[in-house]
Length: 459
Ligand SMILES: *Cc1c(COP(=O)(O)O)cnc(C)c1O
Image 1: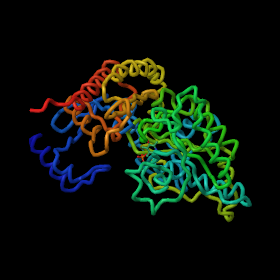
Image 2: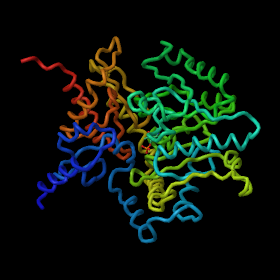
Image 3: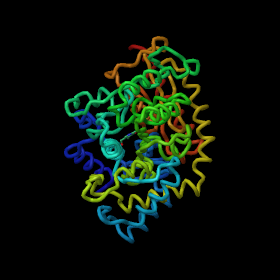
């Protein structure tokens, strides 16, 4: 079959049989899909041979570029041994070695690794561990079954993760299925609910958080938070000191701190884990996206020895953690995750990233002058550009305007793939992206914003 015919055939089959995530399929069926067949470094290549820059690291997972020889080889080598065996009642070398490596690199005090498959399941594991921990650690105290989280939070799409989430558009209709939680305002400085400015605010937004903890800690198992930046919430960055204060408050009120590092983990914020930057050790930490360098679905929930100890006992005490998945500790995933950590060492990924983080700041600065750019937020190599209809009133574009989507469509024509969050554009390139390519990405973003937001002269 010629390339053209096969693309047409695939496109027809896609429209007939596939159901895409977070996608209005009625619209999808009228559009010609971009079918990605290959990748190389920061590029994705479709079935027609068009090359696109991967501006969101294939939804926040890719770190060292596509087809990295070390990562490719790790999977091939592991395949010569075995593709999969279970961790239920058995073990395997890559899972053991990776657990040891993760503990070595994680915030000090996290000593135990529980595997699962994706960010959502890593969060589910953390929530269930937290609840069971309190039942077994303090059997005579009242039930601690509830969770505190920030408004606008996103921790995944399974029911537990949605319960601790708060994105109206995604979550509202599932309310009847969700368990009740407590919510606090996020430190959204651009739209500060207290109308204050950092640093003169002295993190006043933590006072309501403390009030909730003081009044409700007896029922709270944990406080789940994305450290340093709430990514899917709209790239909402936290002011310095915020996470550290959250850690202190959780300790003070005996509530477990659950760090969701699914988006921030593995260098995305400039350090291997975001918690590092505030010298914080959470009680539970969920990782996934970057864990395998964007190669395989794999996740882990890390925890401390005291938490782990509460699950020990004789079999008939039934204190085991009754949870696991078919592919838990998958050897292919663990092998490529080990190779991912190896690449960080061999290529000095984090050291080489620092000047590129500063370059991203410099490149994005002129975009602040664009009349519809309200705010630009950056944490490490993650950036969000918030678009507004007018800058003085900070009025967001209505969802129906699909401003982010339209700009992404424009960027695609110019060779850059983006996936915005409503009216917030996200730029999250692979960590390996070089300076020239980064400059090209920001240039395309800038031109695409101008092209879509500049009123066309009426005919
Ligand atoms: C993506 C994400 C999740 C969910 O991960 P999946 O692999 O999509 O299930 C959870 N938390 C955060 C912070 C994320 O960015």
